[in-house]
Length: 184
Image (cartoon, rainbow, N blue to C red):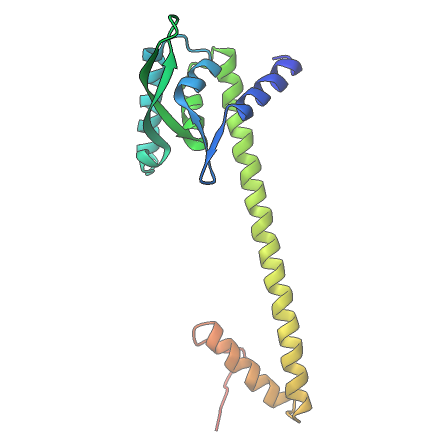
């Protein structure tokens, strides 16, 4: 696939997304066109496969596939109500995975959603790592302050060890860091 087509399709996929209450979604009829399905009945079969995949993955299907209606304009200028489905990114991903990979746009969508999913995973890992590092820095700062206070109060090394071990015991389910700790 040419680079220009990839850039164009990426932009089209992102621009086709909607957002409501902080939740990103696509409409199935829009996605149908994006994925190069000319007939709704054929695309509906792919949606049904994606719903089955979602259910088999233990997901609540109605969290990712929400039935809605929308008005479409007919050639005469009149409007008519048609069924549509609000799709989360996850639902859209499943639809792409269950589509016909011989279609260039389906092949693109499969790669697109896989890459977007990986980007999200990496972002979540980075956030978790940052939070863990911040917690560790806070722990170091707190332990340093505690050690200073304990030594300022005249507690010796053994006393400090007992205090530390009691704290560890509280944190780690009764396990101490000192063997044969005898507290009077």
